[in-house]
Length: 144
Image 1 (tube, rainbow, N blue to C red):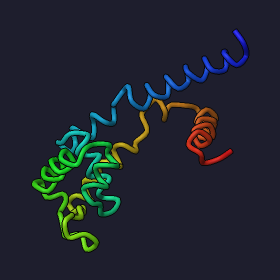
Image 2: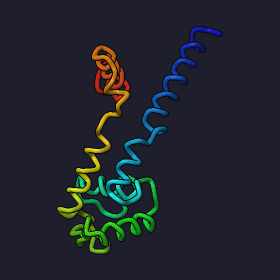
Image 3: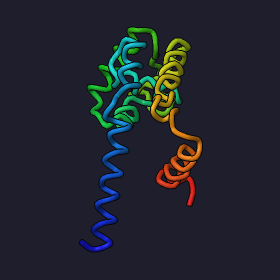
């Protein structure tokens, strides 16, 4: 095995571990679903809308779904009083979807839950946590 192969294998293992940490446990995901009483996809849509008004097309693109499903999700969120549709001044054929104050509050609650580090991360020694922050910052493009 060459040094390149060893390096690639180590990167694959590290990537697998990162994926498991973020996606595998779903600890926060389950917590936010239980707390807000709706599917994670609807929560994701609400969080996107709360960042700023979007057309249904923009929302569908951001959520990597089709417009009919985005419409169904928005219908549900509107029925819960979390979003509202208004005319799009740039295109009268489309609507702008915005979060209501209740939607903004729920999206902020979701962000607080999802932003809470898991206990295993909080339990790391300070020097390990600092090293992890440096590494993840580099991976995210925030440093060199």
